[in-house]
Length: 271
Image (cartoon, rainbow, N blue to C red):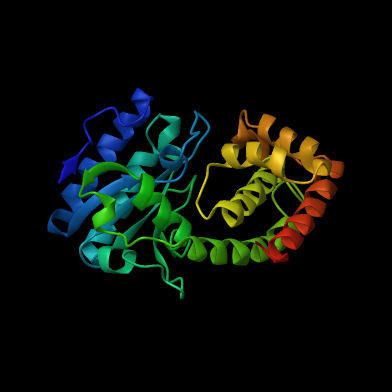
């Protein structure tokens, strides 16, 4: 049993304090149903910065009971009200350990806290091969056993299959209206780097950070897309302000063209 909740698990002391409070409260609410708490996402695979969301997974022994859920809802509202920006950017799920063990083709929902939200909902967001791979291979233990004891190995082909499916699904997102209009200044570079990341998974059979994937794309993809990818890499500061700002129409057009290119690359035979 590893317990890092009191340690400096990130380079940000105010985030470490939020994580300590999260773990202490979750343990108090779940009591014997608590199995472990972990960071995954950018704080696990790399390149997290002050603008990153904080992806977590809490593993339970059994399903969360109604009284436990009531306690968790109150706790997340309390955390969200903290005057610490990290507290408004927690994102993660509560997952019974038997439902975490293997990749779930059905994608059944978990209790999920969205980035910027204060209430748990049922959502399949974290029920992916990518999350399991990131947790198993690079998860940061806040409290509990080594995640390798909770998650079976995720194969390269499982990651590639999920990447191809996600690439197809996100086409709709690229054309859906947003708070900023057709596409926000936050969404536009996110889509570019996310498609770079999925192409990198198809190439490597593993999960990388968006920055690593973008830098790989600069040399591996058609030079036509270098400027678009480099702009996405450079466009990181203050992403949350950009949710409400419309993207440049030319950047939107190029991003949608890049997505079509990525889909064609994904469909091409691989050696």
